[in-house]
Length: 283
Image (cartoon, rainbow, N blue to C red; front, side, top):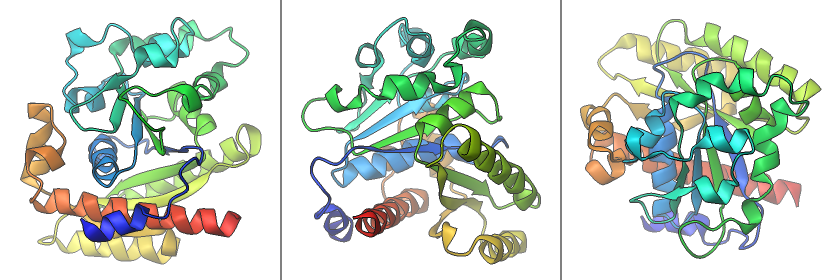
């Protein structure tokens, strides 16, 4: 913990939040699991985090203990402009980690926003309220993580327009690079037409199985193609991480000593280091 705390000790107190969307059009790659546990790990070392659930399945909301029948106001209402962001944000069981929950209503967002000239910018417009939004008391958000649906639709595009960078969870399986190629093309198109600052913050290898030679082959291929964009931290397949959502808890609360939890703590530390280097380079 002390190494992670030292990584955040010199952060700028009043910097604007970094907005990262977690995206991959393939389902089952550990995207939501990464959003939940990375957010928890960041909060554990003193960062204040907001997780925006933009997936109609609402798995990130469920995984943080917010039941379906306890989501009277969600990201759907915020995108439609029916309520302010501050009204919809909820605190969670993790101090410093807040949530904008999702519901199945998001399935209708494309129809509802069809005639809105700023339909691709709705989330970005709402996130402008972040400097004044303090849901769980004290401070301000250092990171906003946006959990996207497993498709390249209007919700994902809203996330990419609102974000500064994309964090890509990538499952260690045979077709990983094929799907990643399509995603990088989409990111480039969004950068050209809608959000000129958008880039890939990093690629996180997930569901890594040490017993399977394929995981090592995929890792070698991805690192060969994308080099330093790929995080050194690798998320292993882990039963405790898989069990945690059914208890409405992040893995770091369910079993903080399991290999998956330790991997997410390392990932958070590495992400903070990258962000610090980025900020120093931009200064």
